[in-house]
Amino acid sequence: MPFAKIDDTLEMYYEDDNFCDPWRKPETVVLHHGNAKNARLWYAWVPLLSRQYRVVRLDARGFGRSSVPPEGYDWSLSNFGADLLRLLDLLEVDKVHYIGETIGGTIGLQFAYDHPERVQTLTACTSPFNFAGVDTYKDHYKLVSEAGVAAWVQKTAERRLEPGKSDPAHHQWYIEQMSQTEKRVVLETLAYLVTQDLTDLLPQIKTPTLVLASEQNARDNPDRTKLFAEKLADGRLVAIPGTSGYVQHSAPEECVLAWRQFLGEISGR
Image (tube, rainbow, N blue to C red; front, side, top):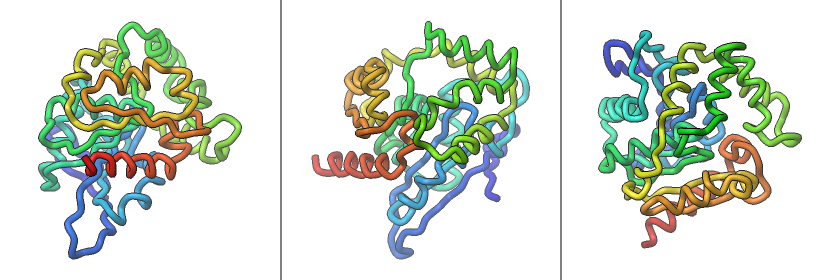
């Protein structure tokens, strides 16, 4: 199992898949999970990408198989990005196509702002850019605090995969993956996130960015989808037709196709 020593408190788990022709040096794609998740959630994307790209997915600090930081750790979007930067340096990767889901996409926004020279393209899947003043995150903190991580995941699970369409076994597996996250980590990250608003940052992010969403999410949440893309300096929204839930997990093939089309548009400029 591959681990990278990022600093004295973090042994980061990562996976590095590359099934490209051995005489060719491929570009690298980074897959970054969201809050209370891990690299396993990207399982369906890897075979779709790794024949043409080197695919690096990681368990961020505090999640999955990576080290849990000591109490009092300074959680921040920039610190998540600094961990990724160190991993890329250790792997001798210069620039990446960054794909993040939910909070992983938010981390990607900050990373593209902090380290624009390391990002070729950015993709945010079902990702928020403003948490401040949103009661949902405060409610999540209260639920985790009172009932624990598993109760929070169970209560919010219906919106993550397509209701009535997704395989029940997939649904249960997803819940089990999230429920493994340590309660303190979830509480500390939620407490930090409710203070974050990246609205003013978006126009300053020059990286070509794809905002990827389900059709239902784009229809019901234009402030998190259409407005998001419009605020970016070089953003575009793609809503996958006929989908709901967290489309990156419920419709991976369609998402990868949309991402490839996005890259084609960028390269054709």
